[in-house]
Length: 179
Image 1 (tube, rainbow, N blue to C red):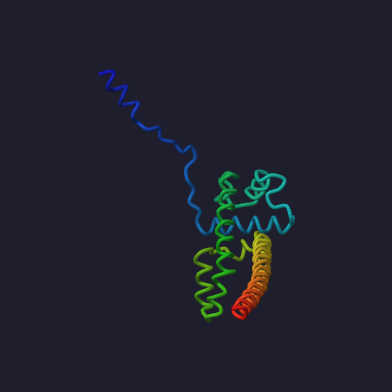
Image 2 (image 1 turned 60 degrees about the vertical axis):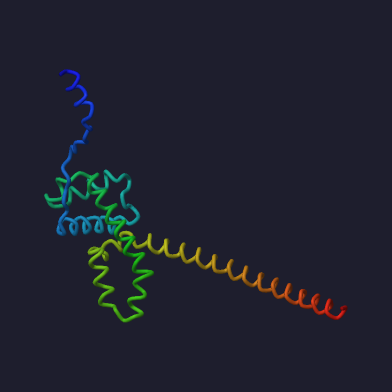
């Protein structure tokens, strides 16, 4: 029996135990967090998560309501990272797909989609808007340089192919004349 119990214990998988419970953020907590972060960044521009994220979010917690004060700085940092990811995805959609909605006259659907996907878009734009502008300009620069290279290649190929066509036509004409 001892062998059987030992093999049963060996077959059981080790499960990870969560030390801290998961936290469900409600809209009020998220809104309050974003307002405090935006206010702190407004007071000290360029100091987002500086000198360290721990100190920055500890300062936010000290000013916040008890609903946020009891949350650790790591959880707040993760929440901000997730909000940033959502914002950047929405901003990318807005730049590329959203333009189609506006061109088709579907502005109501455009705004509804942004509100549904990223309800705090306006506050996040104040915090992370500079990232979208730099990403868009980098994409635009890459796209325009790719387009320039493509056009240069096409022009070169057209010139070469037209030279080859005229050369081959001249050779063909000369061969026909000689025979």
